[in-house]
Length: 377
Ligand SMILES: Nc1ncnc2c1ncn2[C@@H]1O[C@H](COP(=O)(O)OP(=O)(O)O)[C@@H](O)[C@H]1O
Ligand code: SF4
Ligand SMILES: [Mg+2]
Image 1 (cartoon, helix red, strand yellow):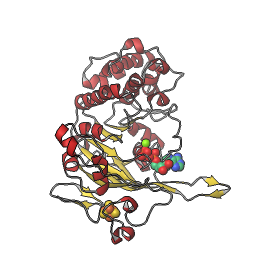
Image 2 (tube, rainbow, N blue to C red):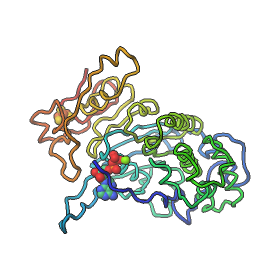
Image 3 (tube, rainbow, N blue to C red):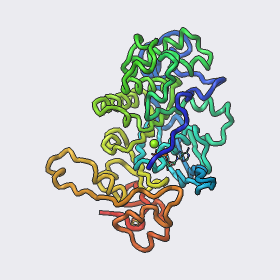
Image 4 (cartoon, rainbow, N blue to C red):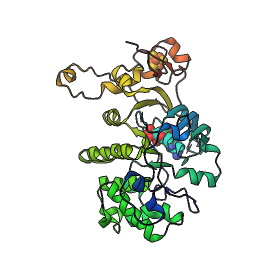
């Protein structure tokens, strides 16, 4: 399924826009360079769930995004229900994977979580406050702690700006002096495996992997608690994907960050995530602990996705049975009734065509799946 071009990312402003009153954490941000500790460099510092009270760091309820249909031969096409009622929770320090085929609504969900897109309906509570209702000023302040890393690093960095400028921008907006912001940019570059010698270069002088490190440094500048990483390695060469994943894992441990890690590569998700949510046609169809979900997938779609992942053990790999799904996912402009997966589901029965299954608990743990006939073995 072809996705339309996304909104321009080179204009993305991680500070939340000019006039933001953000103050970065860490001593280096406000004055001179500090030691390269987690706190000084990232501004976040290890945190616990208790920081935000007893509740989750992020709580999403009934999130919907409908795009107007494109006009074809002067006639308006049906609206596209890209995200169709998503519920998610994420604890402080946790990494949640969001997986599914291209076009299922992952990026649209991620963009709504940082309010780069306005939801059509639903709530997004971050640190206990619904960000869909914040004033522009409150949103700018909140965005310091809620950042995004994009799939295509080069498209997300302004080609006319130097690296120093790109990373300093959110700090300058807050009134940090040019000198201090530059020192901090140098620290952040070191934190992501680059160095001060890169400050005066432009994005085109970097490889994809290096450019993504710059995108990550920019996201860290304001001391975020949660980073939405939208397929952060899928545009990179396979050889550098592991390095960037390693970097994100290290940052998570050192800075106590939470990640929503969007991906279509289930092997990467298995490595970096604590819990995984599987999306299909704008809805979450299964969500749960990584080990439970990978070990005993309950939803037929999760089973099919996992059956396509090669296994490291040669004997298990020889036994692996692939479930081939017929056809493409249906268009979100004309979703099927009942269970959206029924036209492709090997287990579909009559009820699946008429009744939409809701997420409900499957098995002994906390896993939930939206299926009338979940696998429970
Ligand atoms: N700005 C837009 N206008 C119209 N349709 C859109 C827009 N952005 C995304 N879509 C559609 O919404 C659906 C979900 O897209 P997206 O969130 O990008 O999926 P994913 O990230 O999972 O590949 C797709 O059908 C896509 O074509
Ligand atoms: S509800 Fe029916 S069609 Fe949908 S996944 Fe379950 S068995 Fe398949
Ligand atoms: Mg996407």
